[in-house]
Length: 523
Image 1 (tube, rainbow, N blue to C red):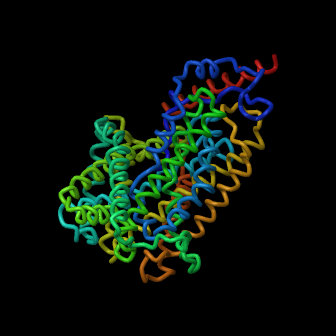
Image 2: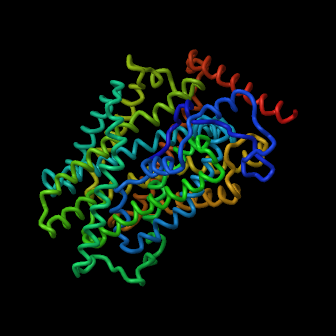
Image 3: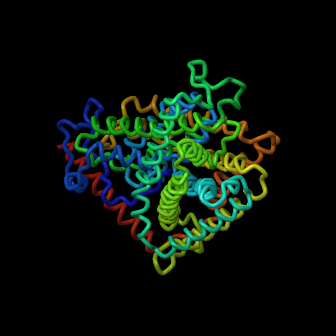
């Protein structure tokens, strides 16, 4: 899932001064002052632990049906964005996180400008407006396999479930409860690893018993059939599948040897993420024909087909409950996350009106959550109005990706500019060949955004222009127009006095830390 601006405590900040070789080892240039003390006292983390954390924050079974439509070609469709987007995101965000605390807002503000930093953190928040309806549509379809499988394609049922579950989540989050943290932490095991492993094992046994695969699995189908740009549109959704790799980059300075261990962490996590994405998608394609595959209920379609074949149908509701529990746990944990990051920045800089900055007695940004909920409810109703649930799911997934890609375009651009304008700034980790890597990620993100305007076969026989207007309208309205209006209309009185004092203290502390390394270097 997407990243958020995580509080800076325990994250580690700027590391040792960069050595002449550019590796960040800092030979002969030891840092002194508060930053060095904090780094020395910071708890250490093994590279394997960080790899598992990164895998948990990115991997999910929810997107498997989307790629299962392509059968064996899903391997290529997952590997391509991994090379041009996943790795660049991980390596670039590691360098930024080890040099500047504060998440994507700080990175973009330092590299480009504060207004663009607000745009980045706004898009992190705005993408969730479309993300939650698509996530809860998947939950609704999964629940349907416990109650009545025919409901999985019922738009009105899907809309009702989305609204009930979302508003329940808002109520729970507004109470400031921490009870959901344990549920979310088990999500990787309960809702991904165990079901995913079971799905793959059943798939191999199914093929091993001589059953024919529903999708061709010969070498001729390693690449998607080229029928124009529409044949590659599904790859756009994979960019969002990989988003979130930058979230755990904030822990790069907690590694004993970031220059060596972080690349090892990212390659290990990338391998695990690819396995979790690719193998279950293949297993689904083996048992469910693409013409019958639902983008929201595809995982349960495959489990149901395997369980019926092996005469263990009683496991269907068990798996459904596990998938629902993991998804809801993730939703509750992330519900207040991006909005909290937006709130913190807005209180300091006055980006949002006081009404949206108001906190309840639990210290939760309830007004912001409720406002987001009203928009989410309107979007949920589209599931009742659009005849094909899969079409609605696909449209909302694409809009989510388009809005979030703005964050990555800004992040890559900021990284390039910071490397050129502030090469002497201390970084705990320096990405090798950062500029070519960042340019690759920038071009890939821009290409993915362009391809996102081409409707896929999952959109059905609807008008191409209707699709472009819906996706483009969602992108412009949520990703550009609304943040522009906030910036245009903001007033000095929108700043919170308490937040301004905190910001002044933070800036003073950072100036003190900056003086330490410079004086030490001069000595």
